[in-house]
Amino acid sequence: MNEAEDQMILCTGIKRANHFPKEVTSYAHGTSELLGIQIDAAINPGNSGGPAFNDQGECIGVAFQVLRSEDAENIGYVIPTTVVSHFLNDYERNGKYTGFPCLGVLLQKLENPALRACLKVQSNEGVLVRRVEPTSDASNVLKEGDVIVSFDDVHVGSEGTVPFRSTERIAFRYLISQKFAGDVAELGIIRQGTFMKVQAILNPRVHLVPYHSEIGQPSYLIVAGLVFTPLSEPLIDEECEDSIGVLKFNGTRIKNIHHLAHLVDLCKDKYLVFEFEDNFLVVLEREAAATASPNILKDYGIPSVRSSDLLEPYVDTSEDNSELDSDVADSPVSNFELGFDGLLWA
Image (spheres, rainbow, N blue to C red):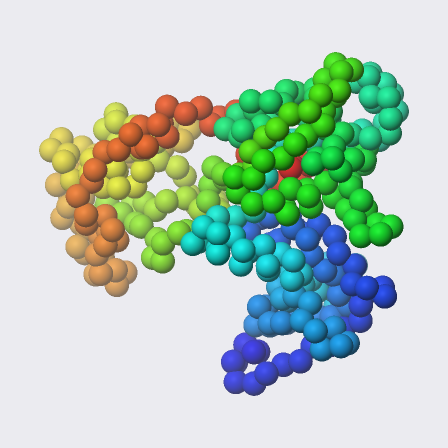
């Protein structure tokens, strides 16, 4: 449907080869890199989610994004049926969508012969393990400096690709994306010149900042003129210059937004002291803040000082404590899958 949602729109395009070219593509809506089809057709706003058909009238996938560039126009992308089938099978297996798995490593291409020789890699194959996510199962079997030369007995090229269809090659991440959460992958590696095989369990990447909220309405808490809400990737994109993370309240480290609301409710001190990143402090007089809040809500048409989920009693759990104890400062996981040329997440 178009933006007015009052009529159907048919977009036609030209495929680039006798069969539709497929490549690992960055998915804008989920910060993932999965198989995609590039077509010569504009995908207008409101057309995402519509079916894409070939000349024989067969559905080949779902239209979902367009390439925006000054150097190109009328370039669209389609989610192929293999990715759609994976999503449906995942839901059928687990009763919900769990996501596409990853290995949890940062890899470097080995196209440089001198680098391969230094790592004692005899053939023109393999990718170098630069970093391993400490929370991934791969951290139990892989080390920095290992060279991955095969994935489930499929050889990995030095440019980070694997065989695809008859005569093509595709990014190594494609093989991982064909797996499901909890599946085991067998990796052929070279460690200090010695070949060995190891196994690792694949699971979806855990982002430090979630891209999508699992609930409908986001949680929020308003204290005088301060608005608190869980951090998300869209919020960073929209408000990154105006937002700052809160770390402590009256000296107590905050576990989550429900914990913050609980601490504010219990506070009998004269001042409300919020400690933010970079040692930035905000101090409010507790009684003055309580007096000002109703007027602020009225002025901005806000019905309540907090979302409905924060009205429930707060329950301290071990999961909350484990989040504080875990060291995430050095974790390589982020919402950005590519660093610079030659480095890639898998």
